[in-house]
Image (tube, rainbow, N blue to C red):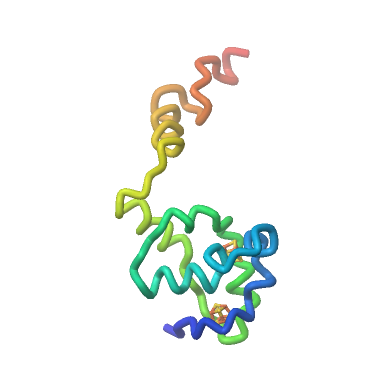
Length: 104
Ligand code: SF4
Ligand code: SF4
């Protein structure tokens, strides 16, 4: 597997970096978190669009979905995620609405 060399050439292809302009929420920032095995909640900013994979001239795949799983493994669930999952289990929708489409 080719590893990220942190060149930053993919940064401008990242919609999150373009919006926020913070290195910590750029593909390079996420690659550095992975290197440090620090699966921070900042990884939730990633939209999983894969633009960085397409733009990388070295063919690096940062495997951002796997990094997102590692955030959860390290107890990185936010309160809103916990609530959304509970609503999905109880009501079948993420909003906690008791009226389903079939009842409308
Ligand atoms: S993913 Fe590719 S383009 Fe982006 S920082 Fe790493 S090596 Fe550079
Ligand atoms: S997959 Fe994530 S890090 Fe890569 S370009 Fe899209 S939002 Fe940015």
